[in-house]
Image (cartoon, rainbow, N blue to C red; front, side, top):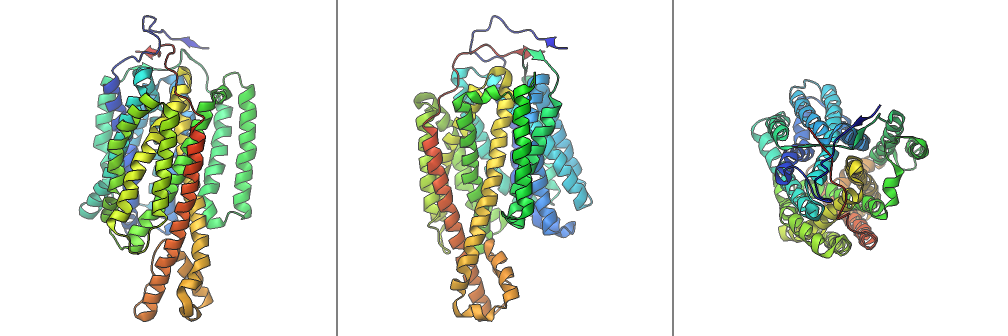
Length: 520
């Protein structure tokens, strides 16, 4: 049975309803939690390893379990918002995220911590698509670009503050404090959201396509799991191939079911709009290029240059802080020039920045990374803002939550692909060039130790030891890592150029359409 929902018939087409800027502030408070959590946990990992006696595999699961739950559930979460109300789903996500953060801080074992991180990922998935849908509902179409620009600036501010806040908390309080900080932020987001947000959803409530949920969840799980494990197993390993094949098979079954289901989880008509499809691919390519390449810069700063986590965060501040400035400018440019030129130009700037970083050397100074970081901020911001706008803006209003889930899923999958594929490229390059950098010293390294040296070099680390041979090994490790890093950035450059060409085929989101539906 469906339930009819009243529509504000007096509202002009294409005009947002409610309190636009209060809505932006309310949803931003919730998303700040997610963004801070994504950056501070990496800084807390070394202390967690010592205090909870965690293995390297355990620490990988602290991050991977969260990302896996987030990626698998995003589209389903978007659909739940469309059906049951974006405000309601957003507030449930905020409350759940804050409570699981509290429970994580109280964890006494690494197993409990991992389980709670998975649960936290599920609540994070509820929060993000609903936030985008609420913005889409609150802002008039002609001001959506401006809202997305402000949204990008807030994300940039959160990303910039994360490493610094995390470093200060871990060094001066405890690792638990990086999770406890989500509790007051979540309480503020919940209270402010209850007051400021107006409910919106589709015009009729209907049943959930549970078979679609299961098929999509298993397909996404197999895909993301294969991507996460491939660097360890190997891309040609039978386990990797099996999970990828399962993802393709179950994904095909999902598409077939969606074409037959009366009320599908992900209506395939959404992708008949070429801009939605291209925007999704652009988001994957952007995340591949950015997250994949940035992942290895932390090893460059901490392994090669020996910086602390806090100092590493400060070294990356030009990019995060630059996004605070660049994102609103990107929103204005997209409004004036349209997404086609703006996104393509942004990817060209990003390609230039990636190419400059492919020229980094072991003794690179602050300016050698700061200049490319600033370029990246002004290059990636138009892509993030524009791709989000063309995905959410071109989707029908009643599918805005699903569109938000697609956008977030594309980013998660792209980031996981970039980290895994570029990781494999860097590792292969290190293994290829390491003997050459060792020179005559290669004969002094036992065959069983060469694999350990390659593993250390793949993350920019130097093997322990003292004396002349230790210095030779350290220099060879760092030089090999830089060769791998440079190749990784060259691949990211090529991906950015590909994305720039693809952006020439997009168009802006709809400027006029029926008024959003509000409830309560």
